[in-house]
Amino acid sequence: MLFREDKTARADAEAVRKNVGWYCWTHDLVEVRGTDAHELLDYICVNNISDTVGVSKYTTMLNDEGKILDDTIVTCMAENVYWVSTLYGPKFQPLLKQYAEGKDVEWEDLTEVIGMYAVQGPKSLDMLNSMLETPIDDMKRFRMADNKIGDLPVRIHRSGFTGENGYEVYVNREELPQLHDLLAEASPKFDARELETLEVYVRSLPMEKGMALKQDMAGLTPSEAGLGWSVHMEKDFHGKEALAAYEDQYKLVGIVLDEGRESYEDIAQNEPICHKGVQCGIVRQMIYGYTVEKNIGFAIVDKKFAEPGTLLTAGPNFAKVTVAEDKKFLD
Image 1 (tube, rainbow, N blue to C red):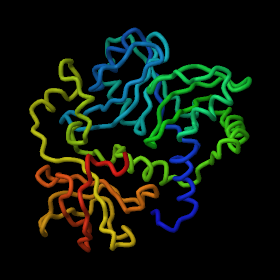
Image 2 (cartoon, rainbow, N blue to C red):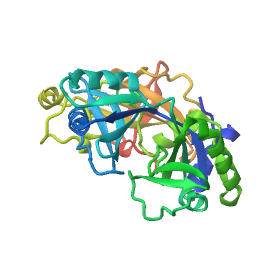
Image 3 (tube, rainbow, N blue to C red):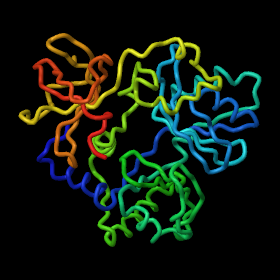
């Protein structure tokens, strides 16, 4: 849990919002390769996967019922070679196996081979440019490129999960200590901070910007989760038939706890959300946001009660909450 008075967590959040925060955060990473790799990934994912080297696509993957199985980023690393970054590699790989028969495709779990430091915040570009052999001023979002920090080969990906401009720096896992030391050495000039609080960079900072975890979207369609823009119904993909036949019933929304409440500690995941005493949804998570200075959360509610400003209650003690605009708390 996070509390307003937590000085370490607050310093972590402020570093990312005002300067630079950096931390080691390697997702499950699966490399998929072969002449049919693009075709296979494009079928598993709802978004159109790029076959242009260095280009990434954010996408979801669906189960047989057309509901979100996982969200992921797929990057074309070389001709017929792709990286799939996911928090749920064990759920992704069975999908590959299910549709790989007869195709020229193989895959390898690189989670224990490749490591990554995220460098996030408004000064992240300046800090990395001071370190890198080749400046990255022109790098677009969701692009990957090879580079060097001194003699250390790195891959730079312009992406992140904080809502700020940021980058991910990939190296071989045994080189993570070297990368750590290089980031630490460069930090003072940019008031950069190595983050200490997992809940700040995994939950609090992303939630303020409306960025949800897979666990928040469990059981929803992409459009119910606010990700309908990523679905390309003009192509074929796993779960398409079920998705097309389903009429959305729920919506993932942001909720703000009444300011008269000091803490969200009695509101756990899957606690009921009610409207006038009748359950209309469930809580997905609650956290404290140090930029907005509020206890905030995500909930899945019946779409009839998803309008911004709707007053609801959360948890066993019927704490008052209000539905936020577009599940975001900070522009």
